[in-house]
Structures are given as C-alpha cells and as structure tokens.
Image (cartoon, rainbow, N blue to C red):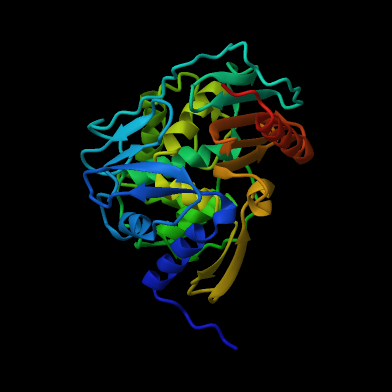
Length: 360
C-alpha cells in the first residue's frame, strides 16, 4: 500500500507525540501552570505535557516557557524574549555554578577505562566522580547539544522547510549519512535528526539556515559557550566532525545542565526511534527509519533525561547524559573511550554505582 504524504503540521504533531509518548524513555516532563509567565518544574515520568511542546514548536518565535525551575541545584533560566536565548542582547542568564565543588570526598568507588569522566550530583552540585575532568578533549557529536541550543535560542519557525545542499555533506571529515542532497525536512525534523540520529548534514543545514548564515552560527556557538562559563571550550563546526571542537568534562557538565532548560532537547534527545517521511524532487520521496544512537536510550532500562553520543578517531567514543537514580539527579560525561563497549560499560558502571550510593 502506497504511503501518502503527510502535511507538515501532521508530521510535527506525530514527531512530538512520539518523542513525548513513552514513559519508559524516562524523559522529563513539565508539570505546572501553562501561564507563559509562570514557573514550571521538571519531574521524571508522569503525565506528558504535550501542549507545552506544541507551543514551542508551532510558534515562529517566542515560547510558552518563560522560566524553567529544574527543581534542583541552582541552574535557572529567565527569559525576556525567546526561550533559552542568550544571544545578541544576552538578556537571559544561566547560573552554572554549583553549591558543591569538584574534589568532594564522597566519591563513588568505581574505576573507569575512558580517558576523561565527570559525574555531578545535580541536587547538591558536588562532584561524585572525576577522572582528568579538567583536560580539554575533542567532543565529537556531543557538539550537537550546543548546536541545538543555538538553533532554539534564535526562536526560528520550526515548521519552515529546509533543503539539504551539497555543501551540507562537506566537512572536516568524511562521514556516512542516510540523507541525500535535495532532501527536504522542516527545521524541527532536522533538529530531531541531529539530536536523535546524530545526522551531520542535518546539523550543518541548521547552521547554514541561521540568521546571518553559517559564520554567524559558529560565532553564536562560541559566544554561548562563553556565556555558560565553558572556559576550555571551542567549536569549529556544528557537527563535531572538526577535531578542534574541544571541552573538558567539567565544562560539558555545564553544557548539559544548561541544555536541561530546553524541553525540546530533553524530548528529542531521548526519542528512541522515528520514521521520517523525506521529500526529494530529484530522487523521489522515501521513509527514513532512524534509531537513537544511544543503546541506553533504546533499551529503556535506565532513566535518561538528556542524551548525546559522539565519535571521531581523535575523540574516541563519548557520551553525555542526565539521569535520576534513587530520586537524585546526576549529570554524566564520558570522553575518550577506546571502544563502544568501553563507553557503555563505564556508563553502566556509573549508573549502577549511583543506585547503591550512600545518600544523606
């Protein structure tokens, strides 16, 4: 039976519905008032608030979320214009300082094989595990978390259709992709492609279609890193294929913490899979069945609220995530694993240790 094309609005609604629909994904949901000037509190599981995400996705600018209270730690974001924005007039401020500090004596008793690791108790702000966490290292596609924040900061129309150009497939390294030049998707779908499937051409297209173009987008990425206090960070491209994209594990904790203020990033980065209907005038329309790059998200055995993987030879296997264990939120950054097995082995070791960690 031939599949009929869906309207853009149907596609967006289906995409959002999928990304919100599974409690097993353990994505964070927003509970609270729908008043645009009110505070919302993040919680794990529970009833999905589809209307909040729809408001974000359907508006050409602005947002239904003016202030996000994560419910723990000191990170908050107040918004005068568009949600999550720290661009241009820097009207919004993130607080990425922690009540605790790295070097805490209350470390989880584990050993990891990855080159750099940081684990933060997001409730107390204390470091509960670290290994070479101050050293800047290539971060690969973890860069796409920053890409997503800059896109969302701009308050662009998420329904606008973008077309992949040949230049979107040119980068510092050759990388495989299931996308083709001439593929057409709306901005929301491109963002889901970048966060869930880590498609490099999608990230490149998002940057190219930024106000002021690609160069302006790169300036915005590095300005955002400075605003978040990421002193070791540098971004040379929006995909992570550039080995110059570097940051320390400590600084990536700040980035993940800031990303937690974006409901779209939470939901899209933890979507297990999605069937994209891709339009292309030259090669014909097709369905692209995509899965999340994180095996932990796909399995659903652990509560993951934000997730992003990465790999290039210089970076090794990397992953950042936010989780909640024993009703305590934590941010985990793993850089430089020499294999996928090492990356996920270290991640599970940390998650299992958090489950048995002594709490006060």
